[in-house]
Length: 257
Ligand SMILES: NC(=O)c1ccc[n+]([C@@H]2O[C@H](COP(=O)([O-])OP(=O)(O)OC[C@H]3O[C@@H](n4cnc5c(N)ncnc54)[C@H](O)[C@@H]3O)[C@@H](O)[C@H]2O)c1
Image 1 (cartoon, rainbow, N blue to C red):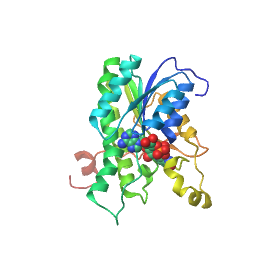
Image 2: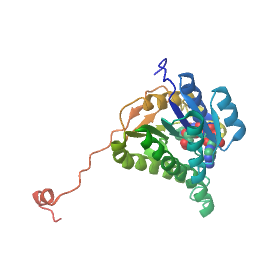
Image 3: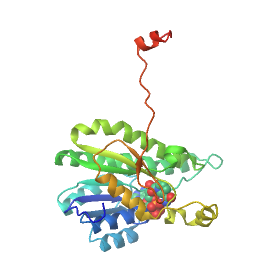
Image 4: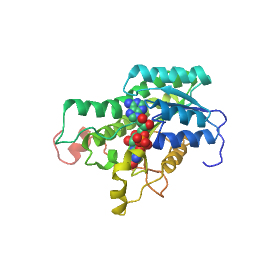
């Protein structure tokens, strides 16, 4: 989409202070969108918003009220809302061996509740405007699994959320997709960077994922999970068709319904 100008579309980006969210804010603003940067990191998000000529809205995505306020402030500032990138997340706070209910909840409240609340907050506004587009940042961990078990659990749930909700939102002209990056060179990975590189793994630059998000925002398709890896174009995942078994089909195979 490089070079295409999106005259004044308004995009709200959660987790926009750093990494993929910040790269997305910069890229979209550079191509003519007006951006609202929502994050718990006031300093980082204020800097990104200033750089992009956009708005900073202090938002903890784990709070339903904060998500409502982020949408309201964006509309107050720009007069409309065209798209939301539901991107904020944290690595898992525990695994199987150091599990506590609190750490598990801390992971899920940001990585899953944060997206559900953001979706819920944006839908009334998008419906009133006659449509819009929501892009969730998932992860390859949400397609393949990961040793970061509860992070991967949340990311799998986001794929299920998108595949389930997107068909219901078609009638409102609202598109909903999830972008699933592999390894990306962001602050979230600083501690593991050297080890990953020493294993020969490629890390995508944050702007590569931002470019994929921009591509998906401009795409007419809905309900897809898009795999994004270093040096590769965003590609929708092909799912197996699993039709529900009907009485006739079961009888035809000699089975019992
Ligand atoms: N870096 C990777 O390799 C990678 C791979 C796959 C998916 N992802 C996903 O990409 C997205 C962005 O991650 P990143 O790598 O850019 O990480 P990052 O740590 O650089 O950025 C995450 C941002 O989210 C914000 N944030 C955290 N909790 C929040 C909350 N409760 N409310 C509001 N903001 C909050 C942080 O302040 C930060 O600005 C996440 O959804 C992550 O799961 C990252």
